[in-house]
Image (cartoon, rainbow over all chains, first blue to last red):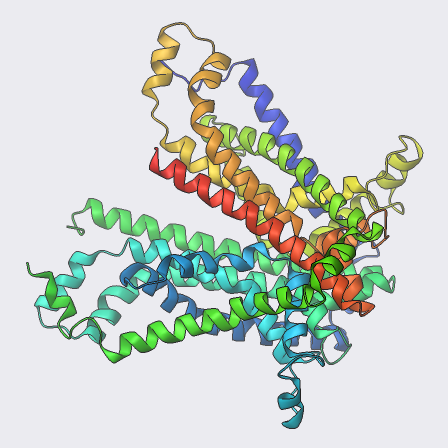
Length: 281
Length: 278
């Protein structure tokens, strides 16, 4: 008996879903494309190759790449600890990781203002050394780090959980050092998870807006990231610039996430084939 | 085999303690201290002034607007998420893989960009937007429907991706039994499939609610920043920071944090409960 035979009801559900996705997601995306190219290709290209936007994009990439590197190290380490180690307070630690998911980006930026701004306890010390965190790149970096914090960890936890420990034991009995065992046994299994986690973090970091707006102030040429450039262009009614920059940013994020997703899938398929062949104990 | 081989140097070597200590320290610096600071700031003039700040008409309107738009979004999202997941898992049709990929798009697109997309599509300068305003008298941009659309776009994958794996793993024999006993597809769905999906749907919906409450980028573009009309709580915090009303910004921030945390806590409890009773 085939339960999945589509009756009239089945086709109705499919149509409802297609229309919903069309209105909610596809429609707006097409609107952005037509909006960016409404005066033809050249105005769009010209506006995203302007010096101001390049500068903003460079700042975005600078912050995002630094966040990704730190999350690659610290995020993986925390995920590893959560799976492989037992220690008091682990439950609390585990709960805290998701906190950035629940806090509004504006509030994140504002918290950093309170922490490092002019009225904060630490400000006299920072002022003494003439080091600026708020309304400067370090604050924007911290804000982005906070917002992106859970992505790497949540991606790596299941990957580390599913590591094949039999291979580690085998390596250990054969006299491999921890270091050798890490690079030859563990790392290859983590690789695709690491790439995927890094990509999600990168996409989130590039798109961050509220937190960097509040903590950085969005001063053109100094603390203006790509998203802040788009926001200012909207406010100043330079629509073509806003639309084409938004299209570029959105397309880039979608592209990297989809490529990483594809890589992850093909890796999983390869592992599946290996285990069918008896590669896995 | 003796598993102690892997712990040959003993469990508590200095390296492990260093890793553990630095991770906890990092987390404390990044997450706990900012939270402490904001609570301390919001209550620094006592509870009554906190209460005063959040009961100011503009602040109150912003909080209520955020709550009702997020709640309405959550209901629509739960319903459509359920339909989408069901269709994607149970039916074969041309273009299915493309649709499945489209579901993930909102996760990758920056929320500010989402806001701009909606303004282009439904804004008053555009033909569709002006048609809806003039002929149907229905405003989307700079009005609550725009907020709801933006929140729906952003949180759409949450419910779908929570339900999908559960539907895939669902034991089909009960459905087959119901079908052989002559139950209609709708009755099978109601009596067999739906009960297994209710808790996960609720969990995913609450997750999308807690995400929606704090949304800023998309909302500030779509709804604008009009106090008492389209200003949500996150946008209110932003405008209070700009006008240097620290107490007001901190008070509404605390309200936002408390709402999100409570909802997230309930969602996590549901996930745990559901995991234990599977």
